[in-house]
Length: 333
Ligand code: SD4
Image 1 (cartoon, helix red, strand yellow):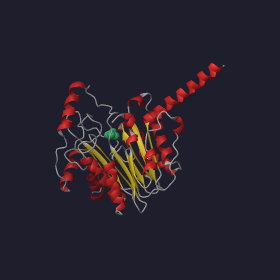
Image 2 (cartoon, helix red, strand yellow):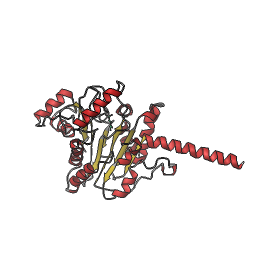
Image 3 (cartoon, protein in one colour):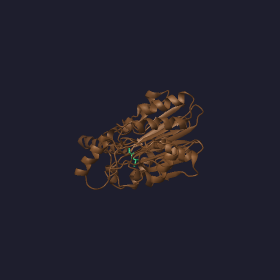
Image 4 (cartoon, rainbow, N blue to C red):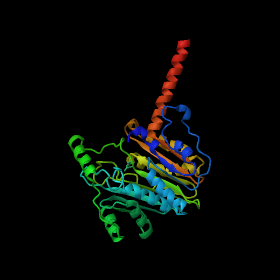
């Protein structure tokens, strides 16, 4: 996926699918007039939204919600679909490996009670979102990592699977020949699934699942499994989830920030924009080299989304507008 297509690919299922879909896009690039996007005020419940265009996953979650299922079941089921899809090289089976050739997965899930479960650096297990749920529901802990998480998975009846597909292996072999020995700043290939849903009872849950940055250092953990960074839910307020360069999201604890800003009265859109600005501010000039994006949902079913490249293009558009204004002014003078 091209980076400019970033959250343009975000998907949503809900009663106002068309209206909301346009909100969750980066289509506003180079169009300052549309920059501060008007948040949709209509309550849309139930609803599910996700990073990227994962229509099958949101359709699955939507089916659960329509059957009076919980938002927790909906996000788990939706994410599982992407985890099993080998054509998605950033999630689950078929994900691109670390620099040593091992596919290692991170995932988390959070429910309406504020309970949270996560797993990091897990090999050989496809459905890490379900494993994260097991951590939440079956253990006194919130995060299990690496071998311990894998052992727990087998105890819970998960199957051992080879996650490295031929395609992913081939891509890794090509990368080894040409790439520098450092993790790629994977701006062209983000597909992490962050999903937020409200069920018919009005309760919010969220989940996030990823194979992380391709060709990362072994043992590297991104934001996707870390509470407050890749995902945060507060059933009184709303939820937020992230995709993109995990290190930057971790440093700003951005999903928590978004939920807290919504608690203080910001719309989901305003809160996502504020979080992107916080990431940009903390990154000096580096923001030009990575992508970070957020989606958010409040209790009323209002949605928001924003990403760095949207912000960046807005700056360029504003600059050009000012330049044009000046040149017109001087021409006239
Ligand atoms: C990570 N945030 O591990 C994830 C990467 C990502 O689409 O979003 N990929 O840093």
